[in-house]
Figure 1: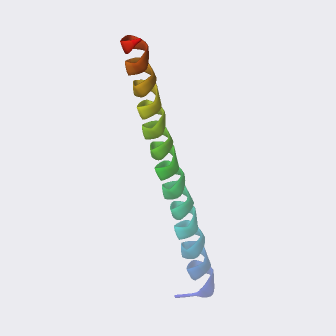
Figure 2: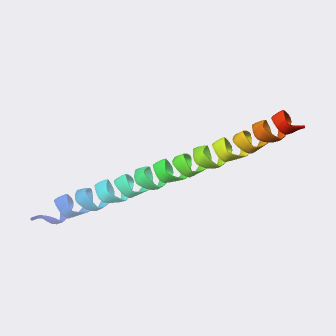
Amino acid sequence: MDIERVFEEKYFLIGRLFTLGGTVLLLIGAIISVIITYRAYVHAINS
């Protein structure tokens, strides 16, 4: 295995890691926004 291929694999894995991290952050943000919206909806109905 030559050095160039090792570097390519390393950068590929780093890119995948950032993509996975971004996806996880996006999902967490979506879940938080759904919870906040649901609470506001329930509060508006009850008042």
